[in-house]
Image (tube, rainbow, N blue to C red; front, side, top):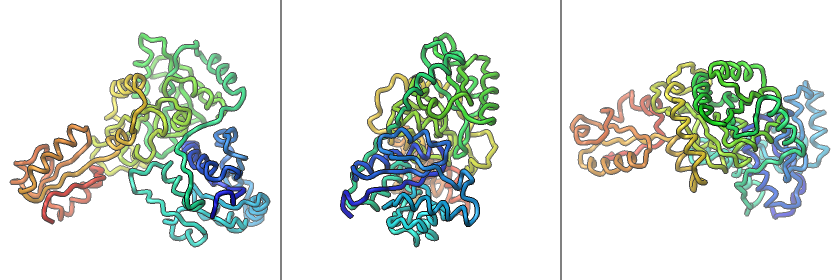
Length: 437
């Protein structure tokens, strides 16, 4: 396949705001590789504003499945006919499931690129690309860029995040801000809810942080959100803080929210839609990431200076943020710690390598020593990890080895039935074994 042979390419991403935003470098890479190609995206209606102003997107198509317009067999084949009418040369499934794959297959799109590790679906892909989702060092953006292998043998990769601003949206955003109490000074954005991939920090924590940010300063806090549940959370936070914030929940369109975020000094929240939007706009991001389950190496704010706050190592439970209600990881984060990171973020220059910071916030190293002759070498590694502020957990096979190790916190055989449970609970991502076996 040579450059210039593709005229129309469809990208499928009918899910959340953050996921669509993180697809932008893939869009830019397609245009860099095939400058004359037209790029279309298939999205939900509520995310349309993210890309309908993007310079490299020809058109945003609204997903008829999620909108309820493609019900039943007749609805599905009407949907097929509509997609077929565009005469796409290729489709990339940044979001892959059976429905959209069948849609592309019956639409006759000749090149179908997607995750080849989904065994049941790969037979319908013409170019299955392996996506090693458990490979921690690969960010979601880099996972998406792997699909370029299916389009070209020598793709031109772009890691750039950029969002288009709708004409007039900035003026409208400023009016909304002023109507809700903005006096024209510095704004710190706070989006305290999450789309569900991670756990949100406590309302009490956000309330305390807001009091600290606004105490004795001209800075105001902008509270954002969409929907009735977001409104309840934000109203409770504002009530607890006893601070009059600039509350724009349910008072903006997505276009206006994007424009509004360009006006803040920093955006605070979990790794969710508005924080990824802020990153795409080069606005500094303070990401509050409480759980062991969600890794900044995979979901960190891309392309802007950022800080991650979270102490998941303080939780001794197996992590499942979708069902867990235990407050351990949330209570481990203090408003003082978040505010200190915010101050550092605002003063900081652009980070040379944010992955180093993300690694420290994402990973825990286990040092396992099973032979006394390796104690000295293990102690040097332990000291290095401590100096570099990398989380670690030291396990010795015997009491005699433990007595000679620094920072040992467990005596256990690797063959113990509890060993692998300990790996899960401690969220061990790297194991460094010292011993002959």
